[in-house]
Image 1 (cartoon, rainbow, N blue to C red):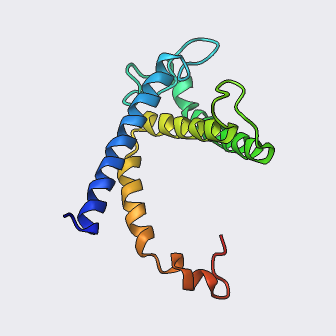
Image 2 (tube, helix red, strand yellow):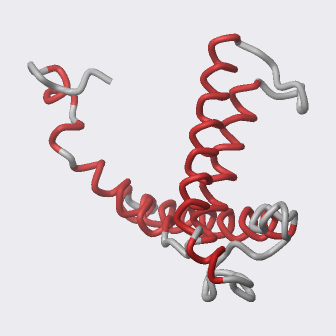
Image 3 (tube, helix red, strand yellow):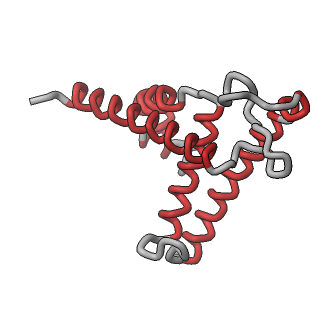
Length: 153
């Protein structure tokens, strides 16, 4: 029988593989649907090295930080939609077999994975390391949270 440490390591490896796959699929789908192209000119918004062909103008390359900022804002909007769905205890209007909070949470994951894929960020590795770190953080144990000044939630 596997011990907890070995079992945990295997699970973290599976999570890492899954997150890498999500990042690849979400970004590829977003690019294929035109979400990384200028809506007016159709030019590629990803800088050379990140996109297949890079932007077709220096102007668009200069705008890339603002494109990233807009993508982060879109992640935030999905989080806000998730909160509203939770507050209203609503079913999703497009996928009514799921709660609104479930579908909006999926939207958050898709947008995060798309941006991580566009920026070639090692989010899966960082997630694995963060889960390991959080498991041993002193400020995350019940005693520290219950202490004065501790994190209540």
